[in-house]
Image 1: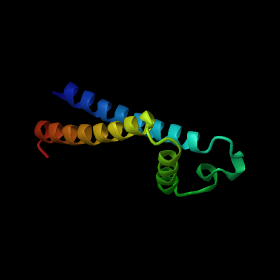
Image 2: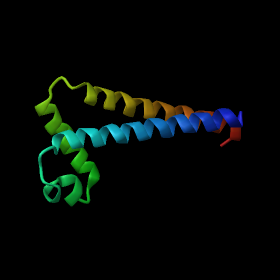
Image 3: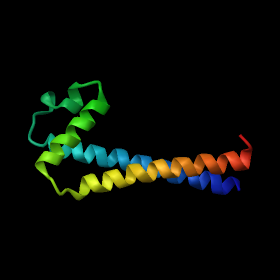
Image 4: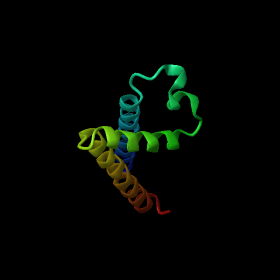
Length: 95
C-alpha cells in the first residue's frame, strides 16, 4: 500500500507540474513580442494575478484555444488526484 500511496502522490505532482507548465506556455504566448524588461511575468511579484490576466488576454486573442482547455483539464485532474491521494493516505495511515 505504501507503493500505491507514493505512486498516487507522484501522479498528483506530475499533474501539478503539467498545469504550471501549461500556464507558462499561455503567458509566453500572450507576452510574445514584448521586450523582456516590460513583461508582467518578469516585473510583477504577483504571479497569480499575471496568470489570470494572461488567461483573459489569451481568451480574447485565441477564443478556441486547445491550450487553455488542456490547462483547465490538467488543473481539474490535479484536484482529483489530490483528493484521491489524501483519501488513500488517510485510509492507509489512519489520519
